[in-house]
Amino acid sequence: QVQLVESGGGLVQPGGSLRLACAASGGVFRFFDMDWYRQAPGKRRELVAGIGSGTATRYADSVKGRFTISRDNEKNTVYLQMNSLKPEDTAVYYCNAHYGDSVRHYWGQGTQVTVSS
Image (cartoon, rainbow, N blue to C red; front, side, top):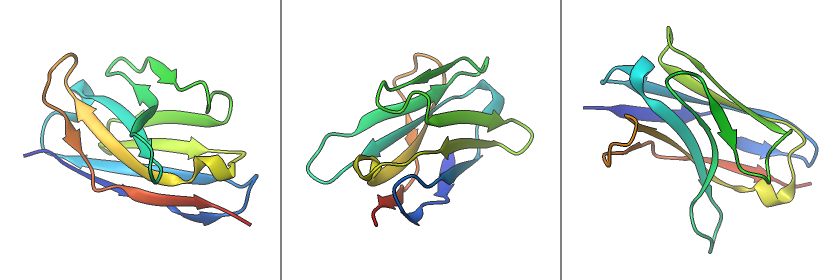
């Protein structure tokens, strides 16, 4: 059974930084494609950033140049470094894992990020 546990959310002022972490257990982490999604109140869940098993990365246009996704296969953990945060980045951030094109996706419980002065 694959389990994902996010951490690192919190309250930060505009322009500040946070680093989210997602620790995985079960499965074979180095083969997972890992994604970060977010969902703001009243909005659909959206893809923020992704990193493949081969470390190729992709980002939503709204976070390019501000967010960086990375992974540590020794620690079974994926990170999301978020800089220059804006109020519109406020959302619950979710970690997602899947093997390539598999329809089976695994989700964490989410961590709240609030950007406010």
